[in-house]
Length: 109
Image (cartoon, rainbow, N blue to C red; front, side, top):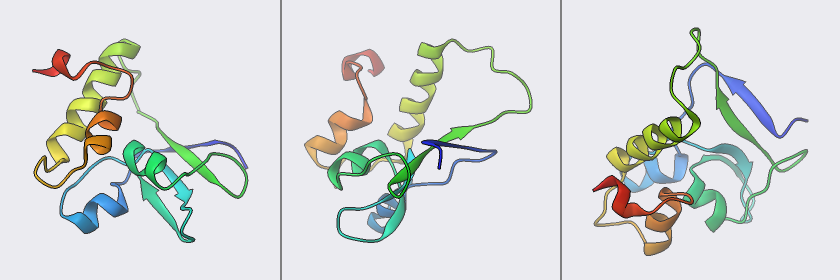
């Protein structure tokens, strides 16, 4: 099994949805507590998920038209989309840090 799967629409994180907010999933992965779920980057790390055969696949969205955005611009859009779905009153500091990937949160103020 590949470490990535191409989809036309990326689903939301199942765990975030249960907590009442919508966040775009990063992967379909097996959680360390047993079941599989669509998980955002924060929950991918929290539940010690991995990519590969028997572990999980990263979602890669395919577009009908090629994107004109640079890699950084695409990352900015993904981060902003995740920010829209997060409830800052219920998220942990780790969730907050993971949401920004390797970027400085101050860039988005």
